[in-house]
Image 1 (cartoon, rainbow, N blue to C red):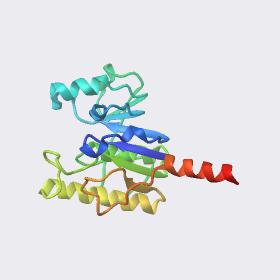
Image 2 (cartoon, helix red, strand yellow; image 1 turned 45 degrees about the vertical axis):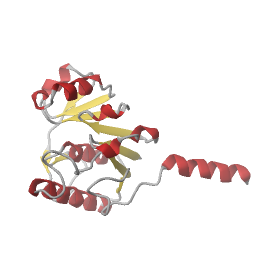
Image 3 (cartoon, helix red, strand yellow; image 1 turned 120 degrees about the vertical axis):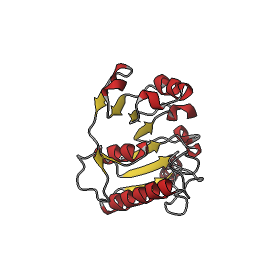
Length: 192
């Protein structure tokens, strides 16, 4: 199963043009015009500016994952989850790992739901106010993600970046679009 993880960074632009088995977005990822299948909200409502909160509340996921029951009044089919701090190892599919940024939770949920491939969109760590490459907090968070990616690869889950313009450009390979591959496979099959 191929899962798109959709953050709020600029590399999420156009993510919905490619078909995935499942998409898990975070926060106000709907600002790019596509509703994710599932949404992760880890921050409390008061942490979002009114424009960001408006986008979040306009999002229509089939499932909401959150660590607090305050979001459940806004979304049907919500589930309050317990988070486990990521310590560098993936010990169980049943644990939902967290660090300082929401996409880590979304990636953990993808793994828990059976992802064999995870494609990151908008998980840039380039312009984030606190967690961007070149800052102490950002560099620490990037190292956490790289440890998680290594652990998932050891478990047979491939992690890709969906677009350029991220702190992971030199660390993760660019995803080969499934739809393009299927289209060429179908053409070659029909020609035989």
